[in-house]
Image (tube, rainbow, N blue to C red; front, side, top):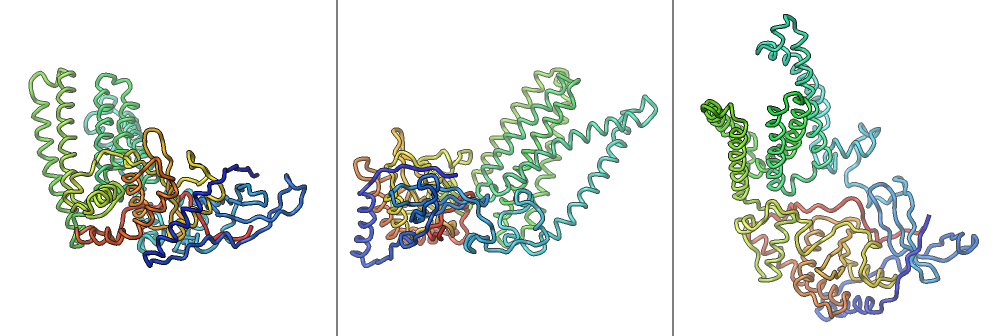
Length: 500
């Protein structure tokens, strides 16, 4: 199946590409701009248009997707740019598109979807060699532990009076099944969070730890309403458990990242143990105060007073959580902090230190909704609002010949939108460079100037000033060796195209 994209001619695009070439020669920074695909020719059989005849075509670029498909941008003799979606076999895929680490043969029978769900990104190269062996043994260990938990639950319920009046253990067993079912429904929330969103916590642990408390508060509301509707205890308690399990799925990984941040001497075990001491002491104090509140005359009989008391303490809890997260001073660079650092450098040629930057960081904000708006991993054909043609595509490839990404601008009536597509081999540094270029364009944008000219100017500024930006980050004690800026894995551009 194929479809044809009609594009209009844009002479300014090629002029802009040549402008970059001339500017760099003038500054004695000669760079070899090239469009690899311009010298590669291939024959493509187009039966629909030519009755089976051979038409000489050439591949402009290829977009490779994580599901094994690829979209080829092909320029025919009629100067029409066409796209063809094709399936690619892993055996024929060039080595540069494969993961840098060989797959684990013991799990070769598992579908990729399941592997992505249960294993860390980049497995096996992203973890130690003993990780899989440990997890395979840990799984049955946890299964046997929960079997024991289920069996003893009935004994606990019988001890507190459940089933005592019937004279048998049947009532206690039935109550235990209902109670354990509630826990099982809740556990599915942790399963979903860990499998689907496990790669998010390293980037922004403060945000996810705060969201965990918000979701946990919603779960407590379900528990609180069981007193009003005792006949719906199981569904309400299950919903509460499910919601709180989702919160725990967000809380535990986030806090482990925070603990790792504390352990600057490699003493993660001790830091975790001492944190447990603080938590247990707080738990004992909280339980004592809670019992004291429940013993207050008239409180336990009034559901309204009980609910209002809970709401007041919960709001105080959320405020204290936000304040505690606000004092954290990470020296790693995620997307939020990268925005703050780049903006400061573009405007003032300085970068804030860890304390000032973390204080300015908005914990609850989503980076996707911040301005300027940056959309990562977008296919080239979906970039709208810009006059495009195969000349434009080739000019973009030449402009970004030595970058591992392609950035384009879509000028909206309200604001600017920046689209970034990453090439094969892109790294966290590529993401940081694209953010730097985005902010320079945003601060220096002139709607009356040709888009390609402004992109060319921004690339020159990037070349001249990015190294100084990195040096200032190092001087301010930022960790530039391990950037928490992930490259989207769903789509990569390959400008080193092969014949069709």
